[in-house]
Image 1: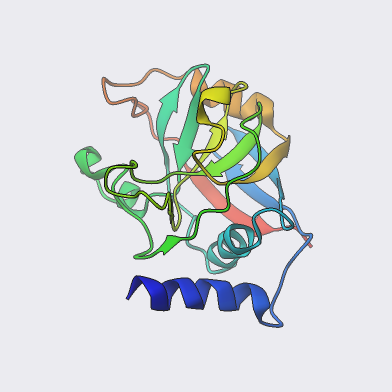
Image 2: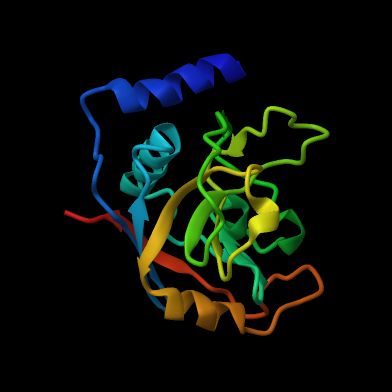
Length: 183
């Protein structure tokens, strides 16, 4: 099943429906973040992210994990439910092949994934992503980086300073109100 889903994800890139070269805009309740996609080094992940964006997948999801000086993370469909214990466990039902190569610099956008013990191939979650709040060389070579924030790092920084619980879930929801591909 995973091979079939991987083949489907790869076919998104090969098909004539590519949106290569277009940035993604995330409108949040704290401001707007614009992401430039790394189509050359992470083509499958970039195209998958855009396909989810154009399908409305990210609209109304929350940034469910904030760690000051480290990352803010979103993209889990479980954040549409009130059960915060499920946050960080969801996805679209498939994973993506690892496209590891870019460095974790401030503003880098990467895909979350399960740990090496259960995921030695380092396959990425199909939807959960994070934004690096600082250079994070300890993560280099371990996760797929598929873009970088070109506008709105001040928004990401503001989000990272919000009060959070002991699981790093913001006490007040941080919504992706609308996500869209730049025209």
